[in-house]
Length: 145
Image 1 (cartoon, rainbow, N blue to C red):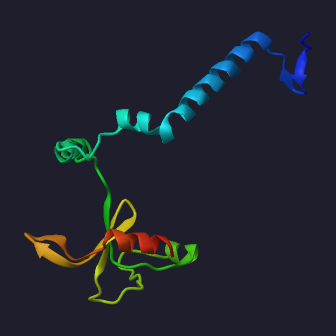
Image 2 (image 1 turned 180 degrees about the vertical axis):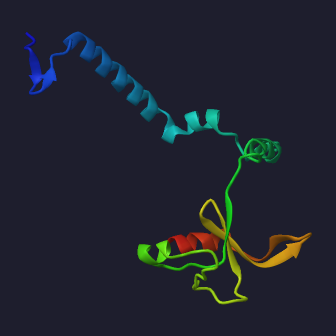
Image 3 (image 1 turned 120 degrees about the vertical axis):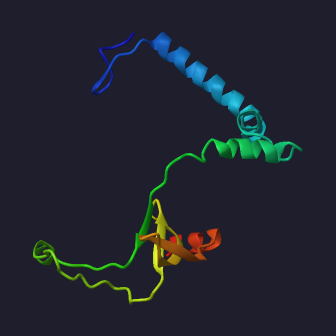
């Protein structure tokens, strides 16, 4: 016999419907555990890179992400200041940065340091010549700090 409340603050539920939901969930879990470490599901979702055509299909998969925009930022240096000093800035104010003149500039892609470089001028526009690319292992090491 169902009461008005199964638990304090929880409305009563239909016991037959609850049993069916639990049975379905248990059956789904049993099927997932029967597949050896989920390999059957992974094989149907992800391509097998061991096959002869794996490299070509990998390039086709990469083509899908080549047009995704990323944000690139070049950092000259950094500084900290109080809000009072920030509000005092006006046209012609000089903000001292922690970088020295001639030091390499940091290049960030979506907030992650990927390279360092130097300023160049090409056709009256500023650019940056990359002088040092941060390797993936170096990026991983820097994340640990």
